[in-house]
Image (tube, rainbow, N blue to C red; front, top):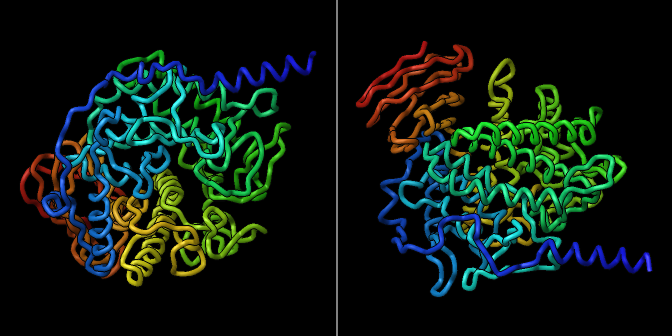
Length: 516
């Protein structure tokens, strides 16, 4: 009888997780679709940011190829669909995917004035269950959940708030926050109830391979590094939203939750000897499988300077993550590693490369900033070189890439922009050219790390549109001559390897700056 009661309670709890009352989208105020045109690449190209790279015209070519593919995936909902907004799709199935969408938004932000891709998330919000659950994959035509291999795999990385905040950093538009915060609060309630492992020493968060987005990863344990770090990110981003909405009590509560998760991650998951974070079992013992998930705490702001430096050394290690195309999703010294990638047994993915590079950017300030900035730039260039070499031979951009050769990864789809647009667009702007726009305060930070004539035209952030370039120099330590043309005033911060950071108040019109 006792065993029967336990089984019954377990079954009831499992059912309750995914019980659909039929009331969808209760916490999201947008209820109906309003038709709006879908832009074409041909008519929009002149409005996009246009990179200048004297020494790397091939990367400029790749940039435009990525945008052209991206415009093919701006869509209206099918007739009869309950979706409420136009969206960017992942390029290979008649469903929308959370994991893919989050990273597509990272590069699509740079075309927000042409197509507001952030609204892609609306179609997940409007299909949220009454209990807070949001399925990772939703059928475009019907709005029904698409369940592959069981409901336990249907929670993706909880990065809705990250995508919303990163969009805000470019656009300066916080008008969505009041609308999405109730959705995210209800979602975190569900995650706390059903994705935090109880009766464990660590009390952290669990995932599955499919749920984490790392489908066939050879990981195990009841506390997953990525899921736990992503929960901390979600709370910190919700705190930022709450601050912007003057909800001080909520902001404080979210910050405390993020801090508590971060402390547990460092207590149980950090391995000082290896310089990595590991998943853990119920007893808090580390499960030593080296995967790219180890680096999420850097992006989440959980790692300190010392830990970041040790993580950086792991990223540089040619025996593990630094391969012909960086970064391998499974360390090359793992017994399950495959040189052809075999999906998440080594393949190089846009999603995790963005996570790593943006994590490095978090430490691109302060005493050792130049080491993080330089490595992020070098790693990005090597990654894009690999994408371009495959593009030359195949004429397209792929879902993932093999770590040990200039070839697509095994099990990889073509024309994948899709998240593979992140490297040729987002990382090219931010880590090759070195521009970090901020629409919140109308500022632009430029990390100078090149000596050729480089820059960008028609870069839009906040209410500013600017064209800016640095003239060719003898070496990276040489003085810099910067030409600026802007339609509105903004603050320019130039980070020079030897001259430090200097601030310039740019007026509208044309201006020449000499930094020496």
